Each structure stands twice: as C-alpha cells, then as structure tokens.
Image 1 (cartoon, rainbow, N blue to C red):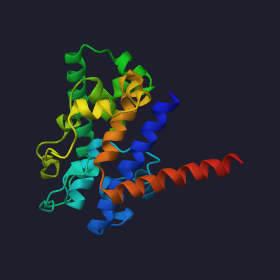
Image 2 (image 1 turned 180 degrees about the vertical axis):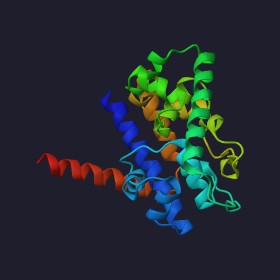
Image 3 (image 1 turned 45 degrees about the vertical axis):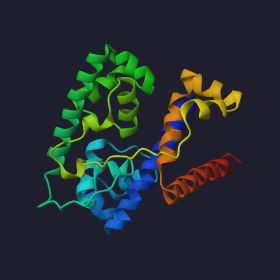
Image 4 (image 1 turned 60 degrees about the vertical axis):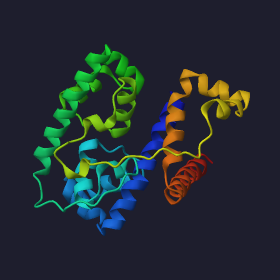
Length: 238
C-alpha cells in the first residue's frame, strides 16, 4: 500500500511540473488560475507542487486558459488553440463534468464486470468514495482516474470533454531505433525480468513509461521535486 501511495505521489508531482510549465509559458499567475477554477491560490499551488491531486475537469479548464491541449498537462502533447470566447460558468461546468465522468466511469466498470468494492480496494479508499465519484458528487483526482482507467481497460482520453478544443491530442510516431522485443528481453538482467513479470510491478512500470516519454527538462524538474520532498521529509524526521 505504501508503494502505491509513493507512485501516486510521484505522479502528482509529474503532473504538477507540467501544469506549472504550461502556466508560466502562458504568462498566467497562480492567482489568475485560481480565479479561473474558482479555488484558492493555495490550492492551485498545491496542485503545482504535487501535494494535492487535481481532477480532470480542472485540467480541462486550465488547458483552455493556457490555450494548450489538455493532454499536455498530463501526457506531453502540444497544439495551438484559439482562446476561449469568454469565461465559462466554472462552478456549473465543473459539477456537470464531474457527473459526466462519473457516468462514464460507472459504464466502464459495468462493462468490465468490476464492483465498486474492487475499485475502492485498488485506490485504497472506501466504496462510498467510489460511489461519490460515479455520482459526480466528489471530484476524482486524475491519478485515481488513471488507475481506474487501466483497471477497467479503457483510456483516460475516453473521459475527456470532446467539445473542448483543449481536448485535442496529437499522435505519437513509432520509434524505429528501438530493439526488437525478443532482443531487448534477452538483454535484460534476470532480476529485471522477474520484476516485469510480477503483477505488483504494474504501477511502477506505468510510471517508468511516463517518465521515459517526458522531455529531458521536465524529467529533470520531476527529479528535483522528488529529491526536494525526500530532503524535507528527512529533515523533519531528524
């Protein structure tokens, strides 16, 4: 359970790095973003530092504000977008999107034949929390959405608001420089092969893939954020 929490913590920091980079590039302040979302500047700062998990509808709204595809805030895609015509009714829009995502989540869970209890156990939350996610009465952190999407064999992109230009994503080209699967597997040390074959390693492998896809500068920022958090924890325990 502790390992799973660590994975979520690292993932939140990664999203925070992308969020902060997009905000700075768009020339927006923390206060402006907080006003756009209808939250406090403190909460917005917590999102950027990975101390609080942001929800997908909030990412969609920030993508509009930054004029970037929402995927850039969690998966490094880029696009040029037209600015929103006017400020949307944030509170109503967020409530609506949380309910829409809840419906999609409930449909995906039913198709996969999974129960709320199984989903709750996976997230280390109560079944009541999963029920609130599905009814849209509680904002679901995108880190939880990512885990559930993988568990239910769907994509996070299936939950995006298709009517927003910010939801557009670009494709990824195949890297022909990669080794064939058989050759790559043969070159791996035995302990790495055992790690890959273990079902418990899936969250760490998914995290490794995301780290691999990050640009070098973003990866450096993630590493600095993680090391800073570890240093802070070490000093507090002394």
